[in-house]
Structures are given as C-alpha cells and as structure tokens.
Length: 59
Image (cartoon, rainbow, N blue to C red; front, side, top):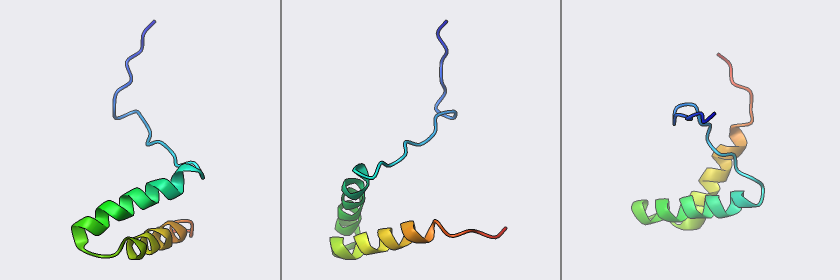
C-alpha cells in the first residue's frame, strides 16, 4: 500500500552536531551578504539565539 505523505505532515529535519556548524555558517554568510554585516557577527547572533532557545518559556 502506498501512502502519500503531505508536506504539512512532514517535520523539519533536525540538525546533527556535525551538520550544525556548516549550516550556521551557510545561513550566516547569506545573511551577511544581504545585510552588509560580517559573517562572524551574524554567526555570533545565531549561536546566541540558539543557546537562548533552550531556556524554558512561560506561557
């Protein structure tokens, strides 16, 4: 039996520890091109946001 999986039911792929730095660098470099900021500055912002995401949220 073939089941069709809709795009709505698919979950986002999770980042592995090995892929994470490369993905962060890729996102940071494309953002840096668009904003004019340095890649290092954007990487720091991404890492800071990623670390703060682990905190508990109220609500």
